[in-house]
Length: 77
Image 1: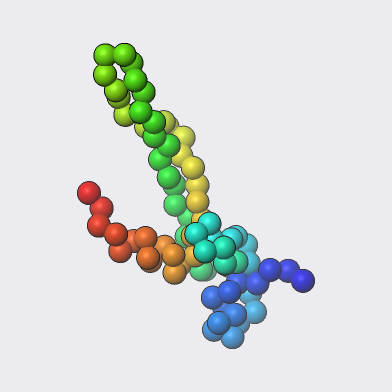
Image 2 (image 1 turned 180 degrees about the horizontal axis):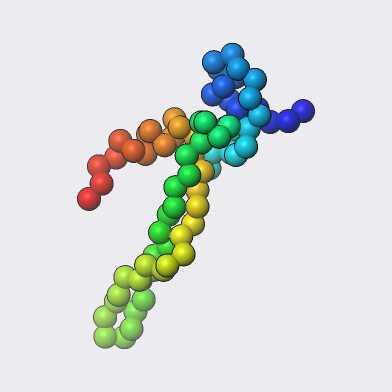
């Protein structure tokens, strides 16, 4: 039995899931999934001081719309 979108199922719709939310683990369809790119950062100690380095490649993450909304309410600096 293929995995179904949890949010669609709550709405009475039968839609196959294409991803799993990395926060809550719920299966989601394309409509109920959000992709974000996370920066990859590091702190390098050069001996005379530390430097924050952000690498050019990012890490993708898939969130359901519910978790995406929860993270979006945070204040950003």
